[in-house]
Image (tube, rainbow over all chains, first blue to last red; front, side, top):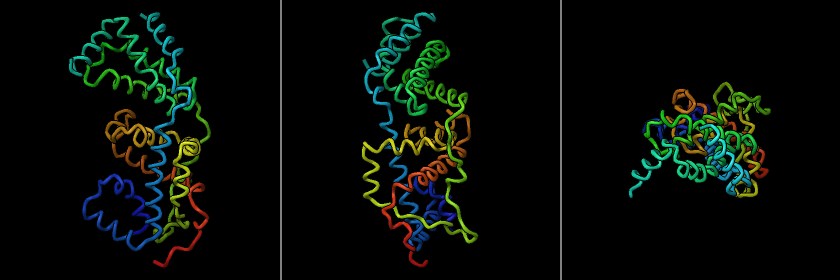
Length: 81
Length: 205
């Protein structure tokens, strides 16, 4: 197994969809390859960062009840029916 | 009244064009849908347009809605589809090429570049609220097809099959794109994440 193989299967490893045998091979490589450990570590941090930054990724103004937009939608619905 | 009764009353009110029910449906869902649209379009006016278009198209197609999910979930899908259509029709801002962002390997299958060590302290800095813009700007640099999958899977938390259905691609393609999108985002975040020791030579293998 090469680092390239490890990089290809990282997503499946992270999602827990590798077979037990595949996971054993994966982890055996990790045990002897600091680069792949570092890469895995940074891959998992990346996922956490996009979750936290993304989950709160609304424009500050979207946080308030957007009364203008609500009115516009309600009016447009009435015009179209 | 149980949740199911409330949902079916909501649906019949919407279908009958009951003014109070329709207004309330708009009032209760606009804010969340606006946040959702903003995640895709990253522009306030475009997001507002998409939400309005989505509501109107939802109201128009109520008779085709089979009630398999709640009206709010159904609306959620329509907003996503509306945003995706807007993204496709628009000439998008500059993005990076995916090939430049995924890791490269030498002939023996080893990382071609040294892999930097990300520090916990850099992570703590970037994960804090005042630095979310930095992460979002990196997400924005992903090529559109990859950014969309990352937003749907890792941020909106749809599963692989749901994402495949929304995008009209197969689940295998969703997995591949998600993995490449994460790898590419990792590359874009890399400059913020090492503590200066990143060029340290890894111990011999």
